[in-house]
Image (cartoon, rainbow, N blue to C red):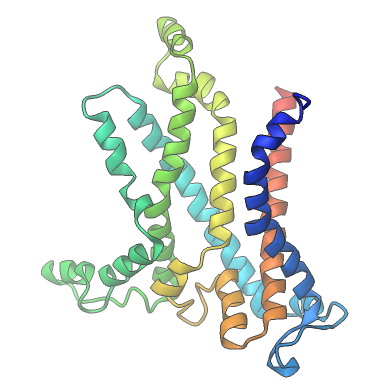
Length: 289
């Protein structure tokens, strides 16, 4: 057997599994988005000449949810990258008990999303949650945190950042530890401080790790469902509804599987476009350097 084919042979089981869990459902979604499959058709898939996509372009609720999803992803992922970098730099410093601290930091990420969402819903409960209890103990009055669009959206972002920042931090920490120590020591011998080391050495060498963390988190933020469904249910008045929540509603409440598949494909295309734009920008900036 050719030496060039040997790696493919070892990768074959993983590629087969990837095809089963990702490629086949994606192909099925593409096929289903070109068919009407709802209660009106008796749940049978009937070709409809792209009517689902025409409906999508004219669907005001889709565009509203798309804007809300982009805003949620942009703010939450941006905060997670900034806080994750800060956390990674702190965990990278030599200190006693560093291993235990790293394990402790991962606890929010290790929690199941449903447990985390229900926990935040309990914290923000009006009037019996711990946050309102604290406000009352300070002489204030209770506040319906999950009844106001502004505060509901802000706490949804906060809950997502709290859970997923450790994931970003661990990826960036791996990047920091891959940088040869002698390069940093050489810079410090020249009198460079922490900021100079970060700007001239660590940040340029972390670009591939930042890209990896960004792409993972971007896909997860665009597909956010359990947090929205359990914490806010998409409310109040649809102000926190995501594209995944809207697709779920179409499939499970209205049994319109064709349009639900179209919504999911549109979300996938948005994530793919943003990812390609980021990768293109990174390649262009690398070529300029």
